[in-house]
Image 1 (cartoon, rainbow, N blue to C red):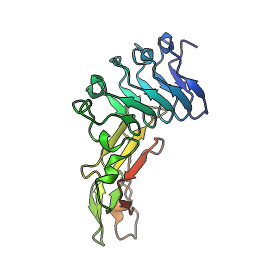
Image 2: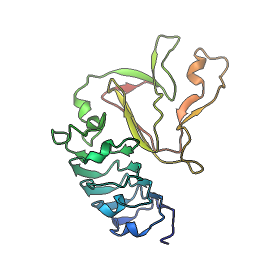
Image 3: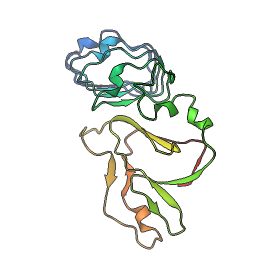
Image 4: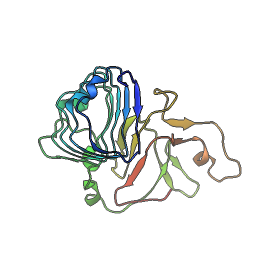
Length: 231
């Protein structure tokens, strides 16, 4: 078993804590334990593995703080929807790092200001941006560029090509999207499906074009911060 390169035990109702000796899996490159009932802290050994590149442990009940150090090869980390808290280590802003920390309880005070990833302050468990904005009605052209429909409705763009563990908050802070997952066949493909096909006999054919939508294999969540998404 210690020769495994990929271990996926996703959505299995597993409970208990993460084992402290995961660094013994010297060849492990992808570990996915998402959507379970895991509790307790994250063992530092998991972040110091010399081979692990993809770590998905979102949607559990992990607690405590993030490890202070991280292996340079671990560049895809999903820790979303847990109970993690405390200060953020300096490695959260590593170049090339795909990191999803949404829906946790990290401190949003001065202790984290210098390393706080963009938009994360809006996406903690209490969603603080809910209290900052009035109600809006807006529309999104999922996976495409901004388009004004025939009735004058502006569909804002959704062209941010998110990776295996990432999130995006719009400049207006009206909506956000959270991506988690990898392709079964490839880990380097784009996360937006594209096509030149158009539907005929529609008033707004561009809205039905495929580019189009984020790849449905991923776990995607869209927030409207006290706003209504009309389409």
